[in-house]
Length: 485
Image (tube, rainbow, N blue to C red; front, side, top):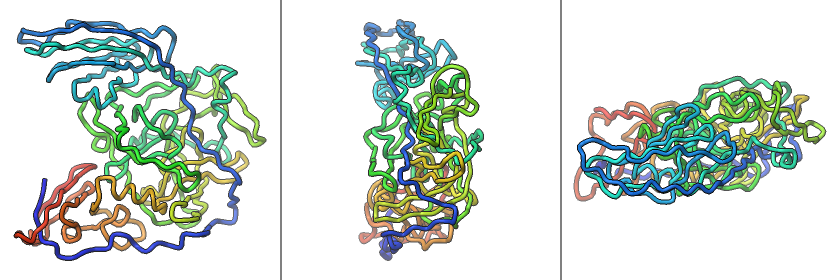
């Protein structure tokens, strides 16, 4: 959708920066650890060759046919599997369906959605999946070929592999995490990711390279902590062509990427599950911070399995994870400070409980619900000392990646008031509050990105048509937008 309007004025996009070098704000109980550990959880994948050819089929009838059915069975036990296709022809309306024999989770893939999933299925629980080839009326030459199974075996860890999970505990005293239903936060491989207001998804830089699936509404794990995949309706493929990632340590550790639609519903995650607004403003010391994510959990320990973590003495302990491990949990704690060590070195510290696999979680300013950064590192100790930390949105590189995510020359508009009322200039962190302001500012060929809400055109007097007008795109990436008079 395009509009053509005259340029009325130009607006400077970037606000003056705070002093960036050596600024450290902290409270009296805060002590910055010498080493904070990244909190991604290593994941072990096994690839099993599985040659399968459906044969080529046509359909001259008036009804859809299912000429090929096969139960795909992994040769060794695996809690979660994916099916990879080496080749296919699904015509214009034909499709392939896959159904878990364990829980009946079902996915439909067609000629458009299968490439979006990188020719690989959703995550299926159990080691058996029924494949069915559906041929639409009038189509010919329809087939699929499978070449391998991808088995998620990261919880099948023996003693010789225990060092792979040798990760730090980062609870700030006793574990205060509780279950959450905030499905703006999803699980990806060994990390956490979350949805934001311009249609992007964020996680930690050390969680890249990314592939696979973003899961929400994750069910309880098995009793020993082995994760259980979400229903295929709640899985979204990661668009690996959009990943921008930096992993330069604390304060410069972030990833921005896009999700593709769910293949069953055709819906995008931001439309189905909502999004976080983001702020570069700094909370007061002691303000309540919330971190929500899919970390491991071994409190209390269960029987069987391994969930390795370091104790205060640096020793690797091996209590078993429980059924809440890698499910969505949330915790709060006090904000401890922000350190700005350079244009691309900005980090927050806080005492909200996290654990391995919380990497990438949102750091949420609890009083207003705005996210202020990306959780990346554990440093809290069980005696209540230390702090966990994450990359702040004061990081210039992260800000630029978010600002230009829809494309260059984007102006943002949001009807919701932002913390501390920053000066409006149309940037991702200082959006205009009115649609006409963005129209005035956006250059020809640019974009106006509207966050979910209702906007007015100020009676239509937002520009003039003519040879000296300009064209721009209007985007609504995260919900229903209404533009009235």
